[in-house]
Length: 197
Image 1: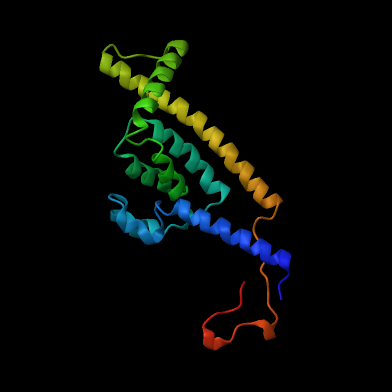
Image 2 (image 1 turned 90 degrees about the vertical axis):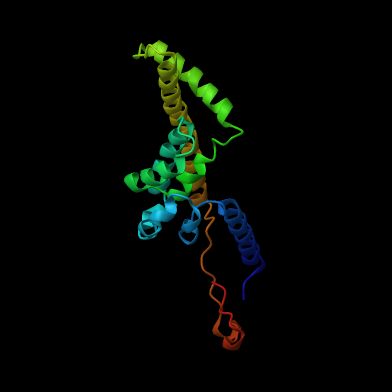
């Protein structure tokens, strides 16, 4: 039999899992790849690569940096397809990369691109980078420079937060050891339920 403390830990774990599932529901998963416009054409490729689905630090950190930079570049509309290509190229986590693309949406695109334009102009002028003569070329150049700089800063902040949370999870043992029931406490085979593990 499990103790009351173990039951409380199990309940906390169930709540965390339920919250995580709710937050991750709109993101691509192996079972839902067919719903995404471009990714569905490469669903078999994505399903056969386990590194696209792991949440290990080695797969998530590249996703955070690449996804942060990509989300702030003026590539609205093709970001999901580029995120999939980057995930394959970098052997990174696909759901994290795609989730970061939703930072830029129809409501946030204007303020984000205005900010990256200003940052890009400042960085280009400060560092003396080449600037195209045309107004459109100068604006596009500033948007890309600003997107890279702001995306790298955002990626650094998110990566530090992720590493801190991963460290806390390992330090506090947020994962639970398996609880084994005694053979006489297990559910009967007729009920279809196995022992809780």
